[in-house]
Amino acid sequence: MSLCVYCHERPGKRACPALGGLICPLCCGQYRGVEINCPVSCKYFKTHEGYQRARLAEEFHRFWLKETESLYKANKERVLDLIIFLETLIYQFYRERVLGTEADITEALEFLKRRLGTIAIIETTSTPLGAHLWKHFEERLKHEPSLQTEALEAIEKSLQILQAFSDAAQPRKYLHGLLGHVERYFKLPPELKESPQLIATPQIITPGS
Image (cartoon, rainbow, N blue to C red; front, top):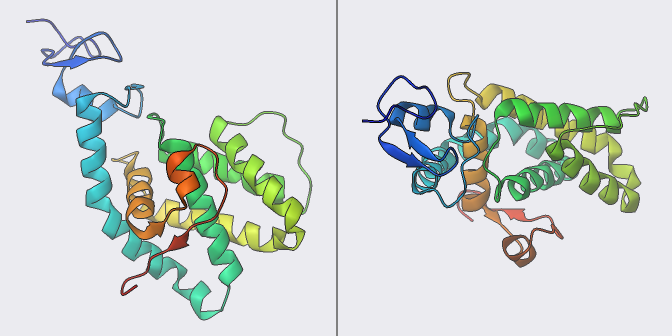
């Protein structure tokens, strides 16, 4: 039997289209979407991705409601709207991509926070996700410049949620939870479902809606 094309130690049992050989179930489960850039058509990736999103969607949503409760009570609707806007941008970015971890999202959010800070920091390079987030936030702030303070608060709260929900042993836990949360509880506009261009911020469906 052929050895795993990734670790070269255990028997390869699954056909890996990304690596062009047989991969062992352990490496497949541990590294897909983290170090292995699986095609979205891979049956193992699709099955696992769907399962993890469904498994974590409700847990993430309950956690999200708890973490944002203080914003509801303080009537900070604009901050909540921007958190939803931010999460929708992340969803848009990853719905057709495979590689992504909490570290990638943290780096992008920290980049966005620096760009929106009161002290201008010029950075010419960013990760693809960071550039994606900045592009849409910059465009929104051109039309609503008064939102800058709320935008920074929304980013900070998103970072807190990410850090609190993450698990070092599961580097895609937050991403799976967020994607499942958006798919299950957001009323996504048709433009987002049908096109890679984001046009509107969706509404969130809360329990009892």
